[in-house]
Image (tube, rainbow, N blue to C red; front, side):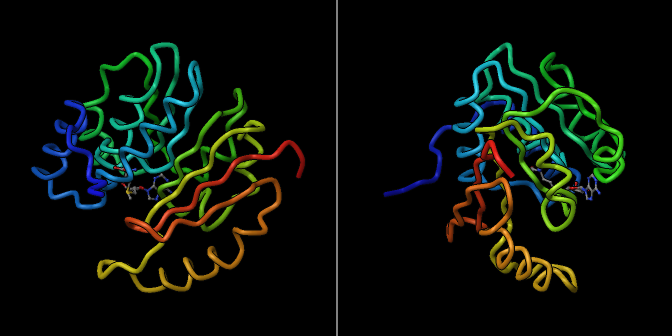
Length: 194
Ligand SMILES: C[S@@+](CC[C@H](N)C(=O)[O-])C[C@H]1O[C@@H](n2cnc3c(N)ncnc32)[C@H](O)[C@@H]1O
């Protein structure tokens, strides 16, 4: 089985080109992107959150799976990187791109809950998971990638990931599966009870 997606959504190709031109190398892979698209499609009319927009590649995959009445809120702390993403996915009316720190966003958010979260920075993944899960609705999906060792990992990342992998199977309010696949994924479903 070749699990590389054979056709890429045009928006994803645009975001990948913008990322490559800017030398941004932290975008999700095509295989993970295809999974994000599939999961986004399972939430018609859903509200989806991404922490860590990057150049917008993951967001482009999510948008390509979302129905027209779904919404994507994506958070990026780095203005230059966010501007890259905005240049590609910005015109989509389903998108809200906030240039802010995810920790501050978690502190301040008072809006409606989400049906899916893609955690792609440290906040919500390696720290403050309980805070994030307050905003994930029962039945909502929690997904994160980059859990298998990578040569580009900064100092301390192996320790953070090791702690995460030890803790996440018993995370209160989540039923979790770990996938030793692609960059290493976690997928969880929010339970109704903590
Ligand atoms: C792995 S990249 C995101 C890739 C993107 N989600 C994708 O799939 O294409 C992680 C991003 O998180 C951003 N980031 C790091 N710390 C953050 C924080 N505290 N709040 C918001 N964004 C953060 C980084 O600037 C970087 O662009």
